[in-house]
Length: 175
Image (cartoon, rainbow, N blue to C red; front, side, top):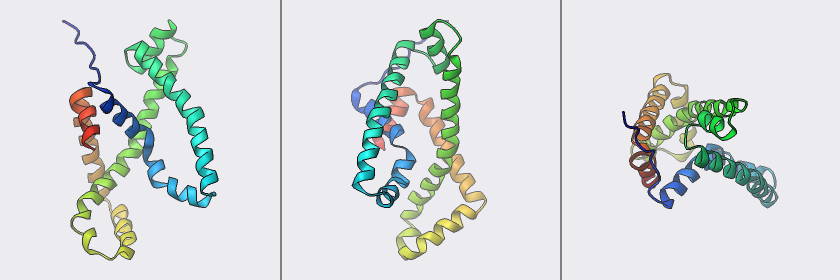
């Protein structure tokens, strides 16, 4: 059986958009404005940017180097680059961390899908003061959040199964 070559990004735009989408995260969108206002505005923002530049760029470069030189999954890349099994636990830790993040993001993704759909119908016609009640009723229900999470997970599987170019890159450019 002939081994298929690994897919590559078709250009920098798709790669940058996918990387930015995964790096920004929900915490930066949902909690960042509140934290900035709560802890000093510009002083918090300056500290945040410095920490992200010092720690974030170093981690990003390491991740790129391991992925580019290993040309395999996380566990096999550590094994290949270091020539032994002593640090393969780091590859497993990366996979576990991604699974843990997906479980968290899937719930929020389901909520966002619900809000996107309802922003054209229900939310367009209610008083802004009642939006909190709308949110509380939705998240305290049983089936709505479960169905939203499942739809989000199915969409995620469809995108990932599409591969790098037709899946992740195309979805990143669309979003």
